[in-house]
Image (tube, rainbow, N blue to C red; front, side, top):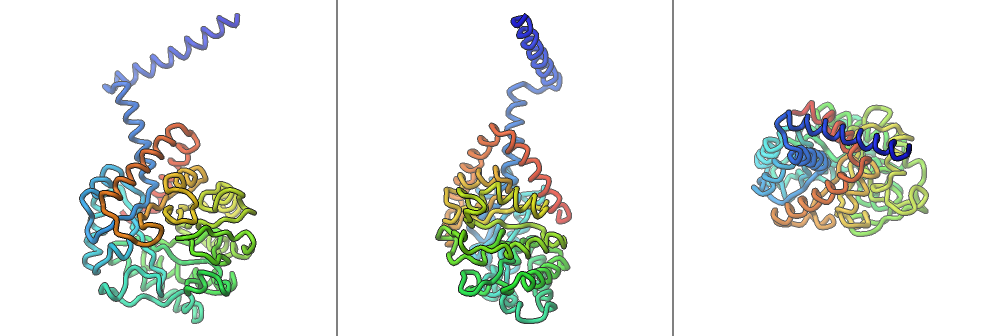
Length: 376
């Protein structure tokens, strides 16, 4: 009886397989071609989770070829890409032409010292820093957001990696650089919200950073492991919670921040406990989640290793800025392309063997399409 049961199961499997083959051949597609197409679809879903950076004031041909074949979800621009407003507009137009599916083109335009579009390149003077805005009326913060948004809009950029919603704790890294709006969650929420409303009036998406809060960190994550286990306080989550509830969180960047109370192994950017547990479940956030640059030392691993862990944790967009751990170096386009192809192949292979990653990729791609659709 057991043997007969096994035969029935086997026969059923053979029947299903034959039916599948018949359907494939009836459609004029070989079985091997169907497998190839499936792999290509998966590779495309992985590629859409990439945010890539490259060197040059024009779109290098080898990078253009790569993104036509493997359309990324985003492109991040730095000083190395910006020479003048007309040049920048031409560059962003070339990127859009290469990715007709739609793409997020992003910069860090916080104001103050963190501004990629500068006076030296013929752009208007950058708006005041978050610290300076936090000392004035909310109307000034909203005006700064609108001014910033208008500048980005005219040059073809649709996502500002701002505002910073970390609490400016005295003597800490971000506070020392003038990148925080205030020392209380109420102040940060109010000013970050006003800045975001200005961006939205200009038609630009925002990005809240650096979840769950880098305000208590003393080290620079570009170069060092940032452990905030002993310094983080729950109030640092409040601005994120309030802005999510107010519908003012288009995207959220998760920082490379280690806290053993959250996860004893991984920093927040690679932690399922943080991304799925804290951000998705506890705070109810359903939008796009970005990593910080995966080349940063604080990620703790190589970019491809970090990227796989981030996908498994539930991140939607992976930042491969290729800036040499935040140094904004000038790598050759050929070297950048080689790295991107290596990362894409490794992550696609991992996804092929993981139903969890496959399911997550579909959800991530849908979140991306929702955000970029109005900008097509």
